[in-house]
Each structure stands twice: as C-alpha cells, then as structure tokens.
View 1 (cartoon, helix red, strand yellow):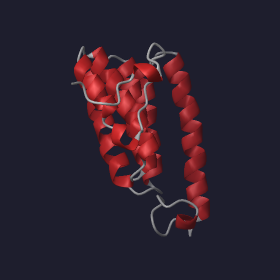
View 2 (cartoon, helix red, strand yellow):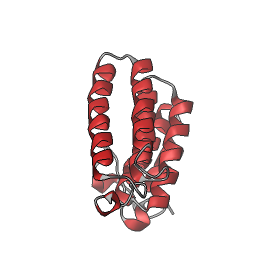
View 3 (cartoon, helix red, strand yellow):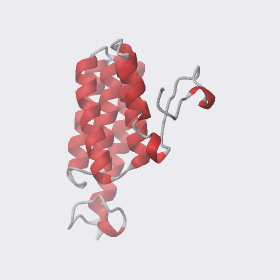
Length: 157
C-alpha cells in the first residue's frame, strides 16, 4: 500500500488515490499562488482550505503534509494582515510538526511565528520563538539583515 511510499498516508490508501490527491494539491498550490499574486486573500484562504480537505482524504490528520497546509494558511493570513488568525494557524502547524518530529519544517514554522510576532510588535517573543530550536541547532531566520554571527546561541547574561 501507499504507506510504503510515504509514512504519512492513511492505511489502506492506494497508490492511485495518493497520486491523484497529490496531483490535485499541486494544482491547488498554483491556483493559490495566482490568488496571492493578485492579493485576493479570501480566494487564497479558500484554496488553502480545499488543499487541506483534499490532503485529509489520504494523509493522516496529524501528519506533516497537513501541518504544511496550516503553515501555508498562516503565511496567507499574515499577508492579509489577519495576524491573530495567522498565529492560531501556525500554532497548529507547530504542534503537528512536533508530534511528527519533523524538525526541519518545525524550524520554518517557528520562523513564520517569529515574523508574526514581529508584525505584532512583540520583538522579544519573536526572538524567543526563533531560539527554541537552538538545542537542536535548528534555527531559521529569513531576515537578510541578520547574519549567523549576530544570532546569540547562548542565553543573555
């Protein structure tokens, strides 16, 4: 069965079902990109919901691919200026990535949350969120004004 192809597939899903769902998700990603480019936030959010519903047909509800739809939703909501909703969505993604032990995606989702905290004016919280991965040496920061040398990996004294 398809769990041999990807551990996040639900038991009993056929290869054909998994492939069809992944193709549909791929198409929805492009449609969402067009909506984002046009700054049509409501459409982009609706497409994200369609994407998650599509993926839930074949993926376990606590899987990394489903967490990715919440992280994507958080980014869209952030662009739309809906920061409280964005924070809620990325918190769901963070919890799911932690359960799945998907540490690479977890660090990227922490960065999404860090950006949201900055936009909310919560700079110390943004810093704390980003540094949560320091024990595993998994920190992501997409701010091009921050170099690795500027990141304090040791607590402030």
